[in-house]
Length: 389
Ligand SMILES: *[C@@H]1O[C@H](CO)[C@@H](O)[C@H](O)[C@H]1NC(C)=O
Ligand SMILES: *[C@@H]1O[C@H](CO)[C@@H](O)[C@H](O)[C@H]1NC(C)=O
Ligand SMILES: *[C@@H]1O[C@H](CO)[C@@H](O)[C@H](O)[C@H]1NC(C)=O
Ligand SMILES: *[C@@H]1O[C@H](CO)[C@@H](O)[C@H](O)[C@H]1NC(C)=O
Ligand SMILES: *[C@@H]1O[C@H](CO)[C@@H](O)[C@H](O)[C@H]1NC(C)=O
Ligand SMILES: *[C@@H]1O[C@H](CO)[C@@H](O)[C@H](O)[C@H]1NC(C)=O
Ligand SMILES: CC(=O)N[C@H]1CO[C@H](CO)[C@@H](O)[C@@H]1O
Image (tube, rainbow, N blue to C red; front, side):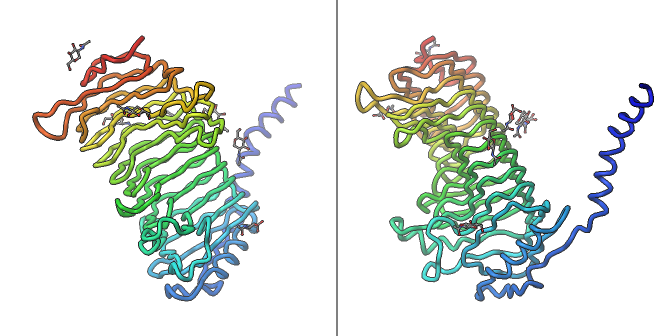
């Protein structure tokens, strides 16, 4: 018996060490897109080199590294990187990946997609990134403008130290991915660029976006239906439309979002700060949403819940509850700094705590608006005395 316990202990302790050794012992194979024929001249289509290099890295055993060297521009017409991969792939993206011109574009929905790849890391080392060439597309909002980066069904994704510029449409879509982190990402598109959301998260769990700067013409980050346990931490937004839960319930969908934690974020000149938006006719919920330690600079709607009117009395509504706004400090560009505009079933358990939102313009007062909003206010200016219990 004792021998057995000893054996179990040895196996228990030793086997992780063996695994570690095996990983270290396994060749960390290096795949360089240049060796696969990439030109990096910014003109020749490097798609084939990228797809072949990725495919080799993906099929390796253990760990593999795909290198996209610095100092070059790689034109890639349209790429679809698909798993599953046997290797844990690290992409060292130190060069610039540039989109083809609008005239040469082959993408309708997405420019670059990454699907069914687990444990992928993309590290730009603060040098590399993606250039979407959006400027020529923004002039044609009704064109089939491609979204830029699409991550679908990727678990354990880690994307960091990257610059993402000028998407024709939204920049980064995260769909059906769990346990993924995006950090030190800089997104930059013009304030007047249409539908250029920074991040769109949908049907994903345990996602963290942190230490990032997002300038765009639409939502900084949108958290859509089927998303749970989302952290957004130390993100600066602006210009753009702020951080939004939803729209939820569009096309009568049943959309559920919960456990979203937005902390230490800054909004500069955005249309909204903390927004929850639902569309009448939909169902589902938005709950356990916390916004805290938020700095506002000249934000039009610092705190807003916008549920619209019900179209007919039989119409359903997405339920909003347990929403906390704590530690908002700064300035509102409009009079109504806190707008809790809920549909008739009501929003419940709203907590406003330790907020101080004043008008951008000296001498002006900020105020508030509630419709069907229930909850508690503590130490908040303006005092939001319209909340019912
Ligand atoms: C992307 O690649 C996968 C696997 O190779 C394939 O099944 C899928 O159809 C491709 N999608 C597009 C849009 O090309
Ligand atoms: C993510 O987690 C959800 C909920 O556990 C699960 O339904 C889904 O299949 C997971 N996604 C992936 C890509 O594994
Ligand atoms: C979100 O933040 C909480 C609190 O710091 C932490 O416990 C949790 O692991 C984080 N989740 C993700 C997905 O980063
Ligand atoms: C947020 O900022 C506060 C005050 O600056 C700091 O004490 C706290 O550690 C920060 N929290 C996070 C999660 O960044
Ligand atoms: C509240 O929402 C309704 C319906 O969308 C809208 O007509 C109204 O202007 C809103 N009120 C405020 C103060 O935002
Ligand atoms: C809230 O502030 C308004 C003035 O902005 C004041 O008239 C009202 O009495 C205050 N309500 C409470 C409950 O302090
Ligand atoms: C899909 C998934 O793994 N969800 C997890 C996200 O994190 C929460 C809280 O840590 C877990 O309870 C979930 O199981």
